[in-house]
Amino acid sequence: MTTSDSQEESFKPSVDRMKQELERWLEAARKAGESALERLGVSGEVPGIPIDLFEDGEKVFVLADVPGVLADQVDVTVAGNMLTLTVTRTAPVLEGFPACGHRERPIGSQTRSIPLPVAVRGEETAAQLRDGVLTLTLPKVIPMRATRVPIQTGPGPSVDPAPTENIPI
Image (cartoon, rainbow, N blue to C red):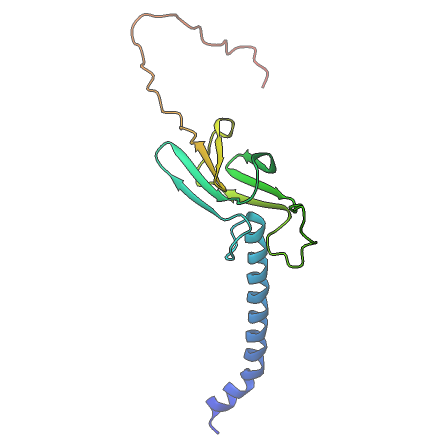
């Protein structure tokens, strides 16, 4: 065994511990990141309210699949550039059928928050529910354009400079 081999062997336990600690930290960060993304409604899994988002020069369009719900079962909120959809589904009551033995269709409330790519004018948002698809049209905030201010020269109102004597320092 050479000197370099013995040095490598003496560092091996420390390197192994560092590797294990790094893997533990990466796993904790991955879990925390997934949790944060889920809270924002942008997790990698298919969400309970799937959406498509499009934009043109003046508007943002959101299509949300909400099959089997009526307009009064959907709540749309826009705060800043965050869009929040809440859908409340109730269990259907069918005359002449026994109690449901197997349920896959969700009941209860589902909420999804979607960060919008730009600032929008939430108070001007239009919503339409048709054939199980909620279509939202959100006008973009148009940034204020800079205005050039002309500077006049020549005679104009005179402004006396402030007196400089008797000013306490």
